[in-house]
Picture 1 (cartoon, rainbow, N blue to C red):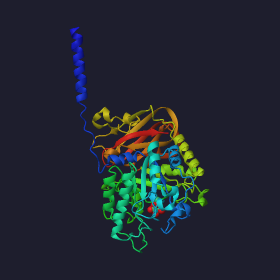
Picture 2 (picture 1 turned 180 degrees about the horizontal axis):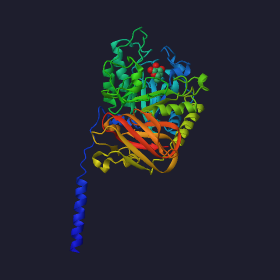
Picture 3 (picture 1 turned 135 degrees about the vertical axis):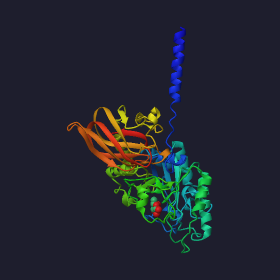
Picture 4 (picture 1 turned 90 degrees about the vertical axis):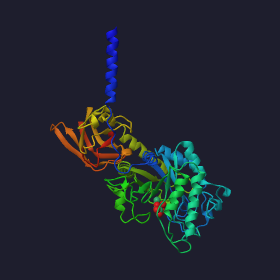
Length: 475
Ligand code: FUL
């Protein structure tokens, strides 16, 4: 009996020593890293843009600010229908044009006389931001606002006083409707009613947003929270760094949009890309575009070129003159969701075996098996000195696949700069090249012609620091 308890004590001690030995330090962050708000934002992946306002009723993209507010007359406006549509589409939030360039405010602003109040909609007591933010909150969708600094209606536009007006409008919106996940600010800047252009006070605008909504991610051409992807085609760069150098740049003053599409490999700030694109030819509704929606194939390609390339997708779906999302748009969105879900139905990497050329400190906390669990926060990493490495995936049985999904653990920065992928070709009894790419980032999805194989090899050729990956999935 005594022997057994001594043995047990020794075994317990050995186990304790083994766990004490696991002192491998985690990888140090590489470069700038996302804030908690940017990380939460990145995980949203796909959400709805809603362009709605005066232009919905005038067949114009940019109203001139002289429209009669009574033009705004949605007969059956129903924000709950927008929210239900976004949810059915698999989207996680909605960003609405609270004010576009024409200056018309979808809320009864104290700082303007060109608002829903003056339109007579809901007898002048309507507040679209109230209705939409309530509907979002009730459904668990996040709520965001686009408030255009360019204002073709406001008499103060083009004078220093307008900067205060605009900051007051921001504060008004950002304190009255609950949490705002994203403040969308574009750099459009044209002449106002007084024939003058505005010198925007960006530091004031940013301070105001952060004071009212410390967790909001501020979008503009160049951040600071997230950046424009540099085109309106729905396409992030094949190489897409979430880092950007912004010295000397400001919204509306960007020398080359290519930089926004790819980011800067050694950029000093963490400013990930957001891909904004419309389901219709214009941003605003027009009956003339009811039969000109992007096809399912086009939208699916956009998904792969945005979410599949380390960018969030902000898909614009403009409600019609009734104030509802048109059935054609709703149907297309649901088709898209079904197509994407079908693409990612069967993950052949689940239950597979994954071996790595190296494991950080030979510590099981950094084992490649962590890439196969569904947990973003468990990773595979190598020793600090290792910046090229190989992962070999052995499936339980040969399968046919055409998509590889990878994720880097971005809380420690973005590292991988080049990798290629081979599959085991049973016919020739050798590895055969499948595809190659540069960056991964939060999410990278590679598509290739279907192959049938039992083994796949990912070769990271170049990383800026030891690779830290979170996910490998194969479909
Ligand atoms: C741009 C605007 O000029 C367009 O009208 C549209 O709202 C687009 C999303 O942003 O800056």
